[in-house]
Length: 348
Image (cartoon, rainbow, N blue to C red; front, side, top):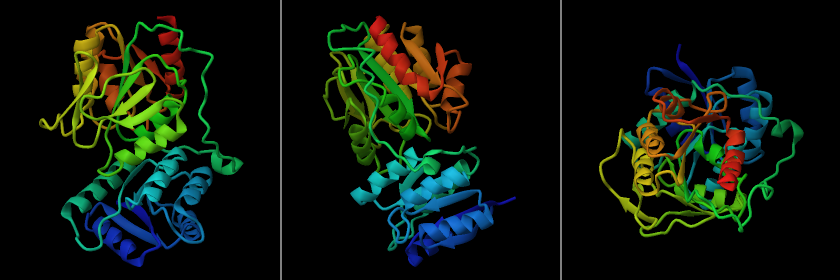
C-alpha cells in the first residue's frame, strides 16, 4: 500500500509544490491538504494519514498548536516543512519537543529542485514508518520550557576525571538532545561535543533553541574553539568536527563517512585518541550506523560509552548497530541519560 500523506500549509502554491513532489513517487499518495491547523485536525481525524507535513505560521491555528493537539489526540508522524525565517525555525524545534519527528526547509517556489524533491520523499518514506506515541502535553494544555536545574548532582567544586562528553545523534536527535542537556547544571564539569545530522539551514536554530532551554551554554562550533566545562559545541552543517591535542576543535570538509558530514564516528574516534578513559561517548536515536565504529574505538580506549535504548529511540538504527558490535557499555532510556552523566561525573 502507498504512504498516505496530508499536506498542511496556508499557501496554495506551497501545498501544490509539496503535493507534486510527493505524488511523483509511486509509493506516496497525497490524500488531502489543509490550509490551517484547525482544518488539518479535522482532515487528519477523517483520513487518518500515515504522515503529515506541517507548516508553522498559519492562520486560525499555527503549526505548533496543531502538532500539540494531533500528538495528544491522534498521534501521527509529523514532518515540519518550514521556511528558514528565524521565527519559524525556532517554532519548528518547539514542535519537535511536542512530538514532531523532524524538520526540513520548505521547497523554493522559484526553483523546483530535484534535490529538494528527493530529500522530501526520503524523509516522508522514513518517518511514515516510525511508531509514535501520545504526548500528554496537549491534553494537559501546560507547556514548560524551564530546564531541570539538576543541582543535586554536581557543583563547580567537583574536579572531574572526565573531561569531555561526545554525543552523536540523527533522526529524533533534537528532542533527545533537549532531554539530555536539560538535566545538566550550568557548572557541569565536562565539555560536550555534539554531532547532529540535520537539514541544511537548521543548525543555528537548533543551537539557539538548546541554548535557551538548557542551563549549559550551547554554541555552534568554530575552528580552534576549546573544550570547556559546561559548554556544548555542536558541529556546523557539512563539516566534520574533531578534537585534537589541547582540547581544540578542528573542522574539515573531508569526504562524508557513510554519507554523513559531519560524522559522529569522526568525532568519537578523535576523542578516543585524545582523551582515552577521560571521556564519555553517547549515541542517540538515528537511522543508519554512523558513530558505531567510533564509539567502539572509544570503549576500547577505556571511555565510558552509552547508547539510547530501543523503546525511547525514534529510529533505533545508530544505537542498535553500536549495541550489536559491543560498543555500548550502558543501554539507557533517554530520560535517564542526563542523570547518568551527572552521577558518573560526580563519582569520578
